[in-house]
Every structure is written in C-alpha cells, then in structure tokens.
Image 1 (cartoon, rainbow, N blue to C red):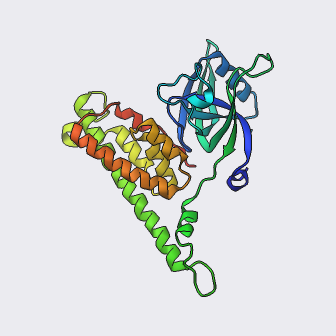
Image 2 (image 1 turned 30 degrees about the horizontal axis):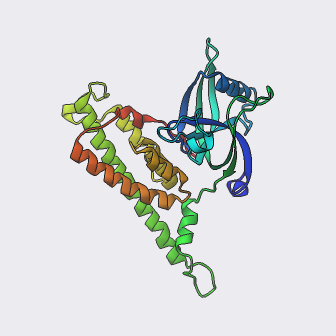
Image 3 (image 1 turned 120 degrees about the vertical axis):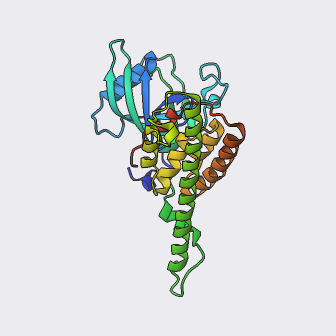
Length: 285
C-alpha cells in the first residue's frame, strides 16, 4: 500500500520485542528459539513469498523493564518498525535462522496479550497506526512555505535553496559520521587484534571501514537511518530518532549527537563495543 494511503490507518500485526529498535532499510538477523516465536515464523513462512503479510513489528523494550512481569504497553516504547521476512532457514532443533529487513514505522495503539483461548496466537500482537515518512523533496518544499511567486505558486528559487540546504546538512552528517567511525576504528585497532586491518601502522583501512564507507551515500533518508542504527547511541537517543518522521530533523538531531559522541570519544579514549557493530548491512529503501 502507498505510504500516503497508509498514513493514519490502523492494523493488527504480530509483535517481536527486542532490546534495540529496528530502522527502515536495516537488515535484521534473528535466531528464533522461543516456542511462541517459532510459531510466528512457521505462520509467516507458510505465506507466499511475495505476501505483504510476511512481516512482524519490532519494538524496543525499555531499559530495565521485563515484558513478562509488567503490562507490555508499559514495558515497550510506543514507536516501532516492521520487519519483512526474507531468508529463513529451519534448524534441526525446531528454531529458525531469519534475515528480515526493516520497512515501515508505526505507533503502538494497543498491545494484545495472548488469552486463554487455545485459538489465540501465543505471541504478542498490537494494533498499530502507520506513520508517514517525510521525504527530502517534500521537506524542502515545506521549508519554502509562504515564499510564493506572483502566480501564487511556490517560489522556485526558495525551493532550490531549501533543497540545497538539505544537501549541506546531509554532507555535514556524512562527514561527522566518517570522523566518528574513524575515531572508533583507531581505538579498536589499538585495543584488539580482531580488526581486519592488514597494516594498521601503515594506515591501511579495515575491511569493515571500507564496507561502511561504501554504504554512506548522499541519500538523506538512507544516511539518517544508517547513522541511527550504527552509531553507539543510548536507547533513548535511538528511539527519538526512530520516532522522528522528518528526514531533515532526524539529520539535525544526528549532527548534534555525533558532535557529542566525538567529544566523548576524544575525551575518554575508549569504545564500549566492537567496531563490527558498524557492519550491519543495509538495503536500498
């Protein structure tokens, strides 16, 4: 369904809580072993490969909360992202190795807990409202609102300037992210021998760094979700980025966050997780 047609519409979808949010365009590998989610994967994989129903909603669990011990609506953040099931490999123990891709953002309206009826699915479901994505060109036109020509149409010069300013912002975030990854890379090379750098002393670039640079493009929306997914941010920061519908505002937030993280990296001189976290693949979305 077209994004605009879905905006504001509601639907009940299966829910898969995870410790970190999923973003559109990001690949999500999963090892599914819990019986209820085995049931979910069995149901989804029984659908035709091209069915739009072969997806589930990923929502992030609030830090320190356990979904099973409190009301799920309280334990979960209210904005999530659907994951479309791609490759699936059934395991000998009954589990599944799954590769899914983030697609559409949504807001939780109500969480449906499994009841006593054996016909009820054993996994969580939720009534969700689909959230609209504000694309870069639309945002540029919005920036020129009120600036019209003699014919009452939007002024093309103002629109051109607005689009150009988005390009400047995109370039700024891309450069900050490259600096950020370089800082993490240097510290990881100094702290572990696992980084794939054939010649650290000679300035060789690790394979993971090269892969990341290939993924960082001038596409504003794609870049915004790559940064949100790959940067070592707090759950609250990531969730705020996921909840933001406007690419321009998301990039503006990331510019501030990356400057903050660069300052901390240079001051503290340590990285909390391996650089391989940055290698999370993305798809063109």
